[in-house]
Image 1 (cartoon, protein in one colour):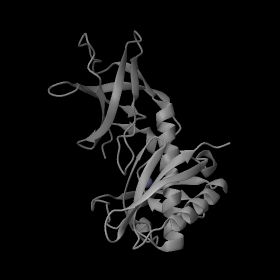
Image 2 (tube, protein in one colour):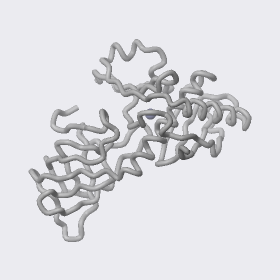
Image 3 (cartoon, protein in one colour):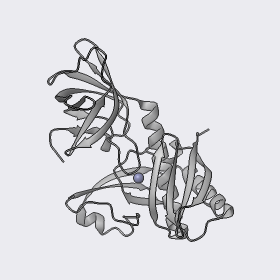
Length: 251
Ligand SMILES: [Zn+2]
């Protein structure tokens, strides 16, 4: 982790706009990208796609669309849509970072919903997660289940909705590695995905339901998710079963 970039999304998922300075601009091959000294953009990972949005130059209001962000050499870089006139921001420019908030917020709700699903499946069926992915408003998770039926899935849906409606707080913590690994069941994925060198482990806790090592952005309370609807389930192998869900907006 570099000290050059302040990565706000990990401590404040609700920040939508901030001022930043352009640190680096590159357009050698492929789409142009910029590095900022502070950013709101989530670079993607853990099944959560990266944010989109824009940066606006303070001096003249010139805007560039950020079509994706990703981590490159440890830093979050913002991939810009190449402007027709070819003009790019310059290192040193002051800009406003503007997230596409509706999309990010839908991803936060979706990500928390998937953790609630994980929490219920682990608590009641002791099934490990083997994979997952999401888009704004819907996602899928794969679990180690030998058998899955419509009845089982309907039961899981009902339990997840009960948990979401219980208005459970969702907390972010950053713990030293040793302390994090002392928590039972923290790593719920079949394969431990945490690289060896990481000193600090970020955790997401749905209080009273689920606690996982996780790098994503989440809502602060499960009531913001609303509910879920299971839209399908399928077998992805002898032991792997997939559950698909979509969000149901809160009343
Ligand atoms: Zn997650």
